[in-house]
Image (cartoon, rainbow, N blue to C red; front, top):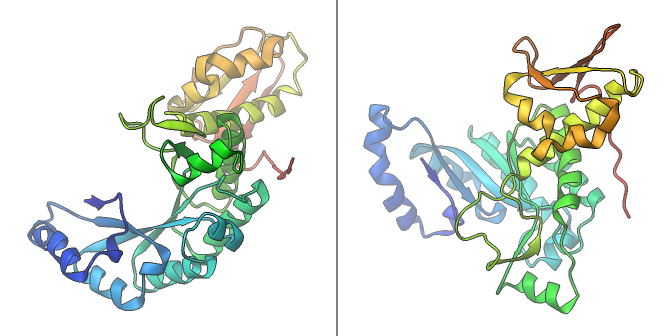
Length: 295
């Protein structure tokens, strides 16, 4: 059971209890095994965590958004990076799992600031992450700033390239990223979205870029035009191809009309490229290295 879409712990305690009490019999019977909520970093303290744990809450997700105080202030978030660090540690100390939601591309944000935000929430002890690059919705303050020229959001391409680096860093730290980009629904369409990094398959696009980069590295040892075969884990075939087979199209003659074959002996992070003379294996975690470049 999950309570999302608001700051749960900012509600009056009586309302929180009213929402959680109907679950107690279901938790006792095992029909529900876990309950998670989302909230603001400045609406968490030790007493709150203890009370919620006693009511069956197992996971708290925090709308951290950024760990840069200037970005938070310019975005009118109303909390600080220190609040987020304290909340993460408080939740961990209470024995609950904690997730951090980050929002690259807010006003004043840069790739370096987003990367440092990720490093800080990992260091604070976040158990898992979500990346939500900014999507500008009509009728909002960000929409007003964009239309006045005071704010330029990340494009889809820019968001994918940044999230690729963030995802890789999280993988290196063995911290799961459970979602990249907003969930597609009827409320996100050409009428409501003014700009920003909106794509219904942003996570797939991001992971596909990691596989493309690894393919480029592995294929550098195979002469262009030599017929090659590519193998990957069955669940990653579409991401290795890329949307509309874009990865193979970008590689052009380097892959000589190669197909991507499923191989369940490989992990989800591995790729194999082979020709008649050699077989080369790579891993998107250990064989890729990224450096943040600001424009």
